[in-house]
Image (cartoon, rainbow, N blue to C red; front, side, top):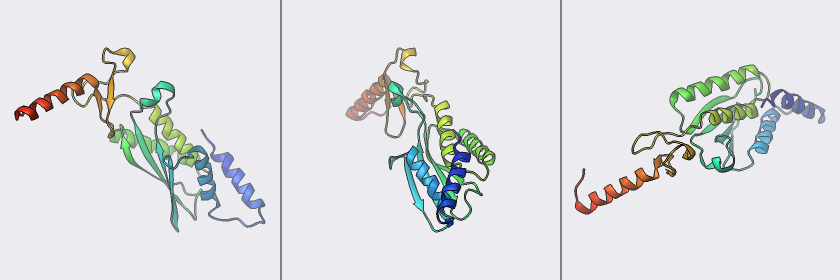
Length: 196
């Protein structure tokens, strides 16, 4: 989703028309407005404003719908740091935090893709586009991990006899029968004092 050229042209036009006073912080303010429209919840977007830079932290998950919405295996917080004085002429600095389900090599690949998007849209508003590209990447890489106990792949319920998958808050995945078996073994070991 490439909104960069449209918003860049639109915002410059709006701010140039307003009494001839062009505010150098206007591009960052426009990006914030665009992102708040895309991510209205405080849990999706947080903004930290400093004197020289503004940081947009986007909490991104894959685009999945319907019953599959509960099957989000990856997520990331995308931090976009914009220089208040030079944006959009200089692209935002890109960093990641709170990464779940992506390897270091996948993060490196995603950083390269986002860097290429910045280069392609040089001098234009890029934050909405970067968020869309990152969400698309997460959607493409939203694959079930392995069971943390048996280390077999977690297979989609329609393809397996193991129909129940458990997910912990920290994004560890288990086959329900593996977790139940492990729990019984732990309870027995605790009750008997035997560790095995």
